[in-house]
Image (cartoon, rainbow, N blue to C red; front, side, top):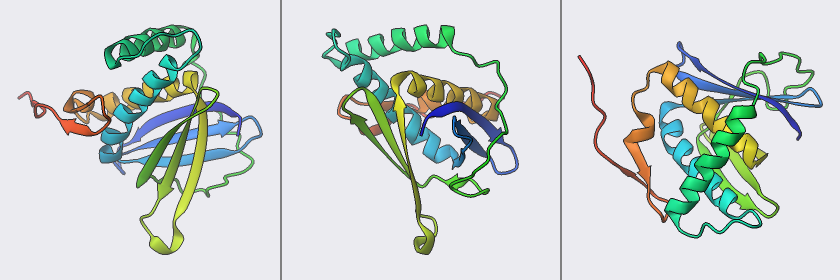
Length: 183
């Protein structure tokens, strides 16, 4: 699947993020991300992106803080030249997962040889009709997707999702201080 565009928007009625991607061969894939899934997925994807950046040939970032700094530098460089102004094109000839977005109940991240991140999305909400989709993203697309999800989270006013959890060096997510609410 050659990804052409990504889009992430908050659907106020559903209170979910709608992740859409279209391919160069006119297919569109649609996914629902709940607040809870976003809370877990974004930090894990960011950590995987840091590992991908550190694994690039010629990079010497072996500890977690160095990997994070390297990933932030690469992300900033990518974001400066990325095109976020072009509207998402509704030109899909095929909807392989159907017209209704797939609800992401499980996600599995795997760093692949060659510098790609495989994200396997699953919908296990209906055991009789479980669905799955695998995305293979180069690190630049990973940075773009995380950026779009974070923007949608801000627009959704879901609070400080990015500060509500922190990823330890071993990978599990642990709660940090509780979110603060202003009156």
